[in-house]
Length: 340
Image (cartoon, rainbow, N blue to C red; front, top):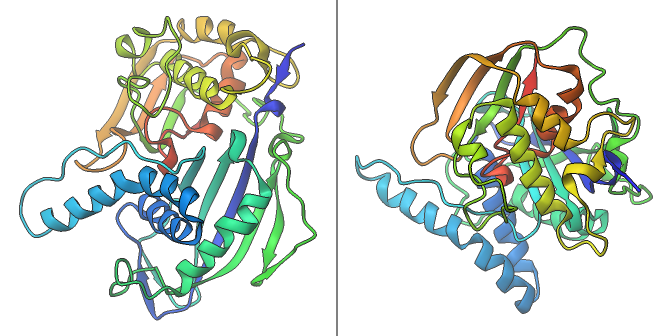
């Protein structure tokens, strides 16, 4: 029996923070610090045994910020960004916007909980209280001049249901009757149907890094994929190989094994991922306009790529890749793009 995109477990939360101070300045890497602050608060709130797991997961970020503070006093460049994430499958996606916000303005970001972490109860009982504490905290580790921590209220939280957002928190009030499930994100989504013309441009809206992806501890690389990303790391095929790796991780540990290449298909049928990979390999990269991200930042490149006409049959797979994020540092929102 074939598995559809709908079987991918995911809950998407769109969060609006309302600034309650005269002015706040977002940190340079907002999703990174957001993960670190919320993760630290969660760790402090958990029982000792569970807390140890979170502290271990957050330790690379702790070391990163320690080095960041030390090197901030010198002219030395920051070192490579560490492989780090929460001990659950999750993504922090900061919506593009400005760096400085005034009183009453809203800051938008998205949290994605995936696979076994796609649990609405976990969000309500663990994540949401940590977000509330981050809004009034006076912890000297991050309550610095004009920083966002300790200077916001949670104005609204929405949960994705297909292409629309259901309200969970409105005007600061939580709807306790609302129940989110791990498949509603795909309800009514017609993958590949939103484009009015054949796309040729792929714009990375967050940094990405596909080179050597799968060779670190953050993912388990299936056999037979050792050369694909190294040979053509900027190709459409490389993106779909990275998606395959992502799906392998998300389906890992299920009682009934899933053949990612053949069993996962768009809801309305279409090409298997195996067929899409072959077709993507026939689509040439014509031109790229990519810029390297600063040293010490997550990701490697950001910008645009231009291809020959992208076959419509692989559009659903590319759209899925953009929702799930691909490559390294997906926890911090890296590896998502738009098609034009």
